[in-house]
Image (cartoon, rainbow, N blue to C red):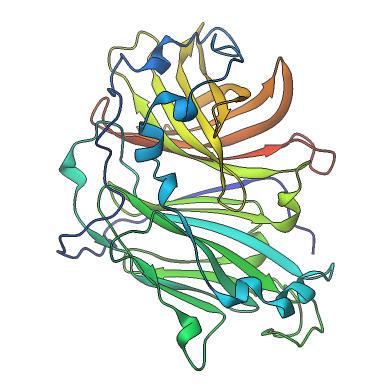
Length: 378
């Protein structure tokens, strides 16, 4: 089956469906060591009139020398899940068939109204305990994202009769977020060696995410290229970013970016700054990006710099942002990244700023290297 390679945006707002529990433990709390969230942030010195923001190609200290990237973005507490299906030789053989479907879905849930100096007004515990399931094939949890304390995957491998189409978990968030990177495998048509309806991937096959705050389903045929953010209340939401195995190629590599989009009240350019983790398709941290957004010569623009984990220069990023006229405080962005004026790829996503100036806000986006297979369409 051929998948549409252009990213599809979906934004859904669900009010009055949030399930709250009065527990005291939280998850992935706000940082204790970070830079100031106001106009003195180092990103505000970038020049919006220049494609590279005036940042140059020099190496930086890891994390840009700012512990905010390690603390607030929480990339140091992701962990692989010891599910035996992830290393099954039987699975590996079946996956090698060209007409088998191998998909990856990164699901992140929790507080989206977060920034480097966000106050504790949104520090209410939310119970995201639930499960995900597929209607055909096998669902494998590859990695937990920002799980801590009592958060965990329910170990189905200890069950005498495990359900390999379902993954259960226990998760609570307050100021932070949790998530899981899933692998979805649907055997080729006629392959009866594994759990399958035997008809390969069809339009009727689905992935379903079920929790107290949100239940939602997506066709498996739409997972590749999926980019969806579901807002469930003023502070919480769930993001879904999907890939297929062709997106793991270095030539056509795809990934996501997750972080903060901060508005600065005293900015003369009617904008602020952004910070994000630059993430590979399997959830591996490639590096970090920081930049500035605002209005320059009447145009809504952003500029920034991407570095690898060790601080070496990766690329510059620049583009345009736009507000959503129907939802004040939210909007989208789209741009290109490259080196020395040569475009390597593109990025697009959505942002939200907090009603509290200089406190909170988020961005979620996707990126891809341009290649002959997909062209330059995002």
